[in-house]
Length: 339
Image (tube, rainbow, N blue to C red; front, side):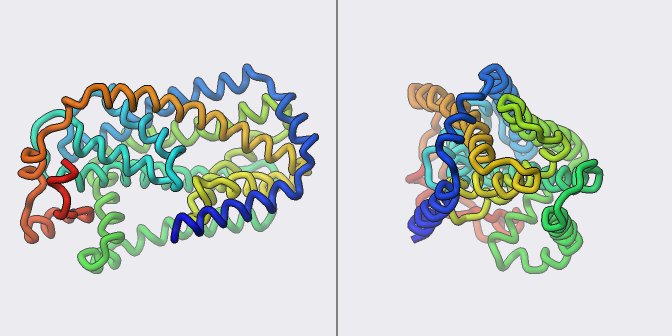
């Protein structure tokens, strides 16, 4: 049912967008793209994904996982590929959590599958928080006059993030009752419970988000668009956050519609805004397709997977242990089969 809703939402959004677009202008925008800028954006994204892999590795090591950077790069690119292939923006996160939980080397990690999912969620959690912070700071410091609705949206999202932290002690009282709350609490604890982890992951998250903004800046420059760089620092975070709404397949339609909406105040034509969105997305698509090679390499080396008995022994724990560990992802049924 959820997939059907996403399909219908995607079709409706794309119809609304492309019914307004002049296709000849859209094609002209594509043809005007300077490929050197696109290649520069692609190279920046590849480097950023390597850095994101290191950030994930730091979080994973904090809960007991091992493995070199190359392993996490491989799993990260595999996750990127499945984000493209699956009808949800978090499908790749589930895949890379599975790889970490069941294919990572090293000694036994108690509740390894649950902790693998926790590291992936915390990785996202850290990135989103930094993204919101960048949007708020950019809005406050923007030399370009922003529409009132855009500033209001950013401030509302920022206030929501601050309020969430302020109410964490209250939320913690209900953590044992609701799985999703436990996920957030455990992620906050993993991200902020260790000064070294907090400092390194925050610095990397800042680079990653600045790079994601810079990628769209490069694409915009390649199209010859006259958009102030400061405007991108507000627009890109808002577009990214909007694509997280679960009403379309992988953010399709939402991404293009949000870009059109954000660029309308600057007088940029809908077709040009859609071209900017699609060309920016194409950088991520091509980078994600690199995950095919990592996936095939992982399939060619199945010996990394431990036996089902080993994983069963590592993951089996009592209800008391689960409660004390604060583990939100426990699912005893099928653990032996998954291993």
